[in-house]
Image (cartoon, rainbow, N blue to C red; front, side, top):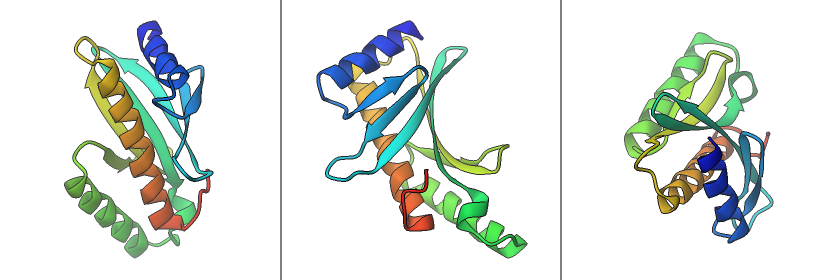
Amino acid sequence: MESLYREVDALIESRRIQGERDGNNVLIRLNRTDRIQRIHLARENHVYQFTSVVARVKHVITPSVNARNALIFRILCRNALKPVVFLSIDNRDRVVGKITCPIHSTQSNEIEFYLTALARDCDRFEYILSGSDIQ
């Protein structure tokens, strides 16, 4: 993870990414707005996992089977349109976006792309679902 932290810190220092790293998390400021998206950095076996919370399910739908099914359908449609970021509902009942990439072949420009793509896509979907920056 130390090499990933160094890469992320270098991207922030060179201003290729607007934000700051706080331990395993990167707070990315989205261009031309005051919106921020938190991305959690993790390693599992031979891949890095970048994960960002879009919203808690209870904050974006009414508690009913039909509303939950409609949300799942929207997530599936979004996944079909955006193949880099995978959206799902996690075991804590949150809509999350995730990107995984191999550790040994991932370069700085790819990390930059993955972090900014994840931040933008999760922020956009959050806005679509809630109309605000609820994090």
